[in-house]
Amino acid sequence: MGKSSLSVVMPVYNEKSTVLEILNKLLRIDLVKEVIVVDDCSCDGTREILKSSNLGDERVRIYCHDKNLGKGAALRTGFQHITGDIVVVQDADLEYDPQEFIEMVKPIENGVADVVYGSRLSGGKPQRVHMFWHRIGNDFLTFLTNLFYNSTLTDMETCYKMFKKSVIDNIKIRSNDFSVEPELTAKILKNKRLRVYELPISYYGRSYAEGKKISWRHGLGALWAIVKYRFTD
Image 1 (cartoon, rainbow, N blue to C red):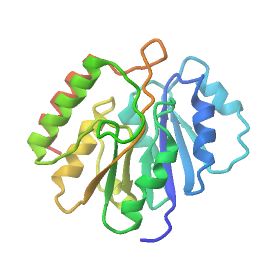
Image 2: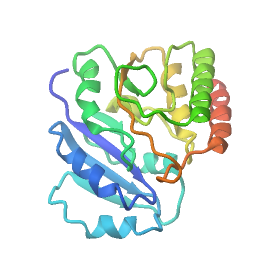
Image 3: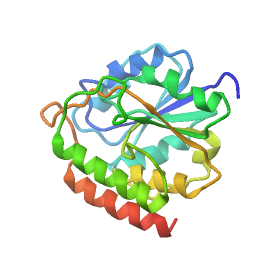
């Protein structure tokens, strides 16, 4: 495939303390062609920071929701505006390191993959010793995904999902919330023509006190999505 141009879609909700730092990390990566920021009606000053920031880089484009809709809705908005030939999702906190993109893109550039997942759970990279029940929940949801879709993923819920643009162009996202993660995975795995790979990535997970948002309630939605999208589109 050769040298690629990478579109980064970044949903943002109430991340005023980290949003500019993660943007600067992204802009230091040469293969990043554009960063599409979708503010999902932040109410902590994030939107004002984004609007007033002078990043000095035309690769950043900012879109704003008038009401809070959820991560899935923000991704749906962002994916409509990508122009690169490969797209990846980036959260607006500092749990994931964009330097991982340099390795993740290689299976696609080398012509062996259509989709690459960055796994926080396969070892080989720095991992914060983190919350036990989150790990159990993630392992359970990943197990069910593998069972329902005959796959061998280790981290279905990872934020770092990278696709050829043609892949995401053919997926209609219906979930508005965090259920977008199993929905995307289901629709990718159901298409047996797609070649899906995983690579280990580092993970600097944060606690609820540090701003983590996902909870066990979102796990219930993910569970339903795994089942639902096995039989529907």
